[in-house]
Length: 381
Image (tube, rainbow, N blue to C red; front, top):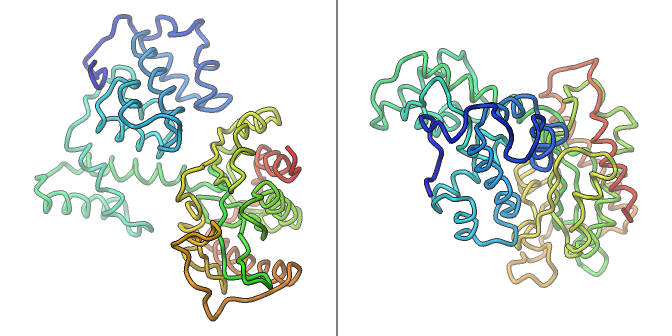
């Protein structure tokens, strides 16, 4: 089976000639488990433009990616590639593209385009993020010139200004969407340098916004009971929201996706997606249960320290052979004092992050974020 339906492959039927499932509104039904309810209009339009053959192949790959779960599902890589109908290398590329942007365009099955992709543009897309840096400065023109110079120095040859500008502008738009406040909400946990009287470390549970790296809420608990830990963190987030700490910030209208790192009680989170959906949360949410999951989202946001707290991600699992020794600057505090200490670190972290965000007086928090937090704060849900 070919790795892709290429842009010059017309398929067995013309665009918009029906559905791989049934009905003209298939984009509003079969895509919902993968792209949310309702799917973005651009995705619905892309689906409508596909032939039946392309839709069938897209659905095949969507279902495989859902089982793959970014390497944490119940299917090995070779089997996933075979099920998706692609080579192993192509599958990893597709999975990476899907992780970065949940779109039909990530699957390599999108409808015939009027413009054939230039291989040089694909190569430029692979290096543009590195060239313009994490915090781009200067004009689009200057960034395009820098990109062209880097590409030429790497042996790619000269590229026209229009292509360079297009690649830079696409990357900036991608970052704008990914970086919008509330676009992706993450729940993570990890051991920290706050110790109980018996020298065992507390586990920090946190609610994070990926784009801004704000910590919406946090709590201390035990990794063996992440249900209670995340319930407390969600409750803290709701209290901070009610206090107006996140008012006037540029929130999106709806959360696009959520992710949660499960504690040692991973079985509790198996039905998380179903529980959220029944509560009215449309964004897809998937728990992570991989062995090295702790700190997956916290580390990009706070690094190895949250204020005066050291983060001991490798010590999250008790008796882990990789656990560091207790540091001299660790603090032994009872639960009440530990909570008060954590609140100070959280406020200082968020104050720095809020200062980087543009004001948006009329923006409000997404309703589905509030529903998700209330669902988790319920604890037994």
